[in-house]
Every structure is written in structure tokens, then in C-alpha cells.
Image (cartoon, rainbow, N blue to C red; front, top):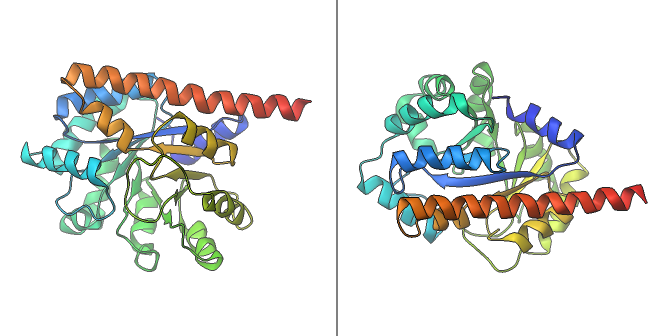
Length: 276
């Protein structure tokens, strides 16, 4: 499993947009989560974002909140998630990005937390409640363990703040496409296209767009606007929770293939246009 930066460089060299699915660990159970990781990895996911269930998920919309609640009710804990990853990650090609709130990191201690997640193959961290002004210690310590801390840019961010976040973010920059929590939307705000242009003027780091992308059309739109990655969460979580675990895994596989085909086709068309 390569690091996030290396994988993005490979994708850029191929003129490919990355697909980053998100699922919640432990929903419906950790055995299904393990199989979901394998399925996503073999059906087009370039990276996989794995959410650690948390009791007060401020950035999560109703679908992911419900998934976290179900996982917690089943007794899912961080230690169990890491044990599962230790078994699964050695056979995955897609780097694992752990999505966690800051409190579990503080509870273990930054050094101990990073040592544990690095030992099970985690390559990136997204910590949505960690402000830029307090992120330096985590970022610098994470580098020692080969983990890249990915920071978020809000749609309301000023150009000055975008530049500051871009400078600190590792691996790629996570552009939040909507104001508010995660969740499926019918349309992506046009403001995102302008934000991508603003970000390109201050950084050459890869940019992933997430929050609100629910299907093929939004994924294609974001790819057309020049995103380096499309991040899809609630749609995958909802699919995985549909029916029996077997039915959920099948629905997950279908969505992953559909999205990867959609964004790959968009890039191919761009290549043809450039060639002409």
C-alpha cells in the first residue's frame, strides 16, 4: 500500500480522477466492514475513507449519524476497528484514510494514537473538528509515522485561509462542497467551481471534493470542474445499510463501479478534447 501523495501522483500522471468512498466502521458489523473494504478496493476505489463511529458527530449528516449510532449500539470501539484493519489492510491496494474526531486522539495521546493506527496500515487522517490553528502538533507528529493529515476547506473560506490550509494539509486538500453537514444532495453548488479555481491559484496539491455527492451526475460535474478526487460518503453508507449484509455489499459494489466508470469516462473525454 503506497502513501496518499504517491498514489495521487500516479493518478495525475495517468490523468485520472480518484474515487474515495466513505463507509462507517461497524455498520452493520465489523465483519461486513472488512468485506466492504475488500469489495471497494477491487471495484475502483483509489482510496478508502473509514469513519470511526463517534457519539457526537458534528460534521455528519443524518445517514452517517444513523450508521455511527448503529455501530456504537453494537459496541464498536476504536480498538476493534484497528484489529479489523490489521487483518484486512495488508491485502488492500487502496490507502486507508481514517476519519475520526479529535477526542479519541486526545484520549489515547497523539503519539500513542498515531503509533497504533500506523501499525495497522492507516495512511491518512481526516479530523473534522480540528481547526487549522491547533493542527500543527498532530501534523508534525504524524509525519514521523508516515501518516498524512488531510485538512478541510469550507465553501465559505477566504482566499487567505485557503492558502494557509493548503500549505499545511498533507496528501491532498479536502474541499467541502456545501455549507453544513454531510449528506446526499441533488445538486452541487456552483461556488465549488470557483473555489477550485481559487485553490489552484495558491497550491498544486491534489484537491478532493466531498459532502453532498450522491451519484453519477454530481461526480461527473466535480470531475469536469477539475477535482483530483471525488469523495462519496452518505450514498455508500446508505447502500451498505440496505437489506441484508449480503444485499448491502452487492449494492455497494454496484455503486463503486458506476461512480468509477463515470469519472473515468469524463477524464477520457477530456483527453480526447486535448488531443484534438
